[in-house]
Length: 402
Ligand SMILES: [Zn+2]
Image 1 (tube, rainbow, N blue to C red):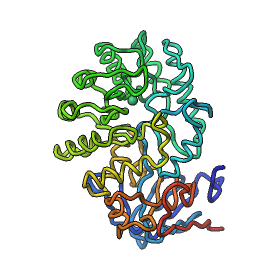
Image 2 (tube, rainbow, N blue to C red):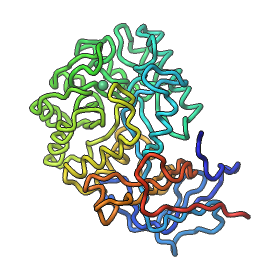
Image 3 (spheres, rainbow, N blue to C red):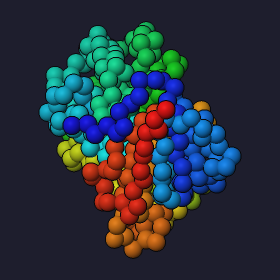
Image 4 (cartoon, helix red, strand yellow):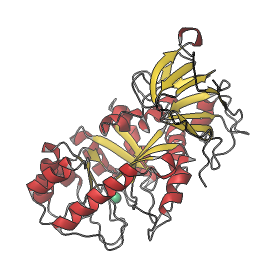
């Protein structure tokens, strides 16, 4: 099923050159567009970015000709709910991830393995599930996508030593606070602080209950809990009143997450607040899929187009919400095009038939880009996407034979 091209070379030292880049998006709000047309990656890591005449492209194993199209960091979906293995009552887990890769997502972050059937809620079970999910996705990347999983939900009875144990086992993020059995603010605050003291991050379920069992927390309660990310500030699916969204945005400095499977009107309100406050670096994006709302394979691109068009923001800035901003908040090396970073890249162009004259203009008009190629750790994984509209110009890739 997986469309691998070219086959990964056996050598870890493989050198990949991407040339003839027409527009290079960095993923960083400070400088969203880079003045460069060439990227050189060795062993999956970007080593050089610049003009072709200044880059060392000798000895390349793979040469990708972007043919004047746009390159940007692979998208990071900051809010997903995977299961591990293939079975899930919600969706076929691996097909969902595969289809999201075709929507430009190269990294996913679990906000809790909430769809595991019979999900345990006792201390031992919570830890075991989180560690099993983390181990499963560390050992295997469905479709090549990097899934950062193992996000325990806060359940009654967890002790400080449990957070230390989970952190030592490689758990990085607490799943959505508000979904587990911990219902009082004092306990949730204490556990979030234990997590932070052990180097773990956290996010909240913000807004009305999404499915039977999740609960409604007030904005003041969320500020008191003090998560690293105000999870789906636009609701999952039911959003807070705008006054409460304002209270959250102004009442703390934590990341503001907007998700696809939420309330679009509330999403635009939160974006407008962040814009007015001059704090766009706080905006991070996710899909919150799979959920009852479905399996949005193009959810990240749809959000980028929605926020750029209705939000009247330059598209190159909005791409940063789905890449560098999320990477910074979750302390990931990917999401930014810079030397030393993983070569997780999208090559895309304006879709055929769009009214936009350039890729950025097409996105600002609300159209999705066409993805011509996706690379993860320098390996071209697909060309072109089977899910986006077709790109006007497609890149090419060739293996250089020694
Ligand atoms: Zn939620």
